[in-house]
Image 1: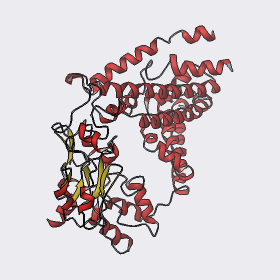
Image 2: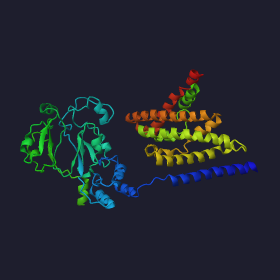
Image 3: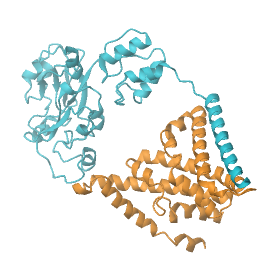
Image 4: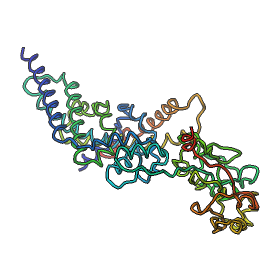
Length: 274
Length: 197
């Protein structure tokens, strides 16, 4: 009899001790979580892109609990998320500067040639380790698609050997820019009308030798710009967004045609219109 | 000191739980895709195995094997105790060491009744180890798991880049590479006894 009762009693008691111990511990040691946290976290898109400057959506949600954190930092979420967050926290909504990614390289297979053949791992990060990639321009897109793999929206695709962004599908998270070892992908405000699609900092003669469209730093754009928004420094033209009026003169005068005049409206702008 | 090193190395290398005894295969195949996840999982395993060994040894020898013998309840009682222990540790960590809790985070509840963890505690009993050797073996097993995970996540990332034939992609090539890594660990059999014995 004892050999049956003792095990039953002992195992029951062990189970009870565990149960009581756990419930006491969870009651005594409970961590107080701000009840607004789950609601705020729910508003954020969950892309964990880090465009807000925090470690991810969790990090930004935690920061938002402290007063003074701006509600318009989520670029992928854009105005909708900013409005929701502001309503939750009871602060005035601010406009989000929506951004889109652009590939600052136009050196596709018709305009530039590779300097050697690369047969290694099909990844830009790996190709970059080998003599800065196989392109004859050391600054250009390597064309192995690390950015396309990183894109959560499928907005980045490869065309004629270089990356291209379908800006109408781009939410501006910047994950492609982080994945690019060459740093040719930049985030620009989606209100932009012109952009210099080249990253080469080589002297004009060298750039022209390896690529028929690269920026040769001739300064024609700088002279033609009435707003003084475009400057050439380090052998590359760049546009000051605060001054640019989007007149498109620079694109007209550009010797190689590397300054593009286009509509960079991102996915958020199309959402708004719809 | 010599025995301490011997016990740990035996558990970690010659008797490696994953690659030689084939216990704890699910986390080994599931979480070895990326090195940071593999490290997080392994640290959680080391932690839980040592704690479990330290708790189950006295329970077996003082309770199950004392007075009325009901050692046949070993498996049930061990699962119960280990599961409760891991939950308790999780609550304590969440309160007092939030950074560690975040690092171990999802892995802790995953391994509450992992076969590797349960296997270590039960083998400790059946091998007749004393308390110190039990805890050391558990530590060694955890380190062995860590070693296996780190090696295998390296192997896996290389295999994936090598673009295997379509039919082998995914799990098949993973199992093939796991078996080759396992074979390499069988090569250690007998080495340690020669060195220490």
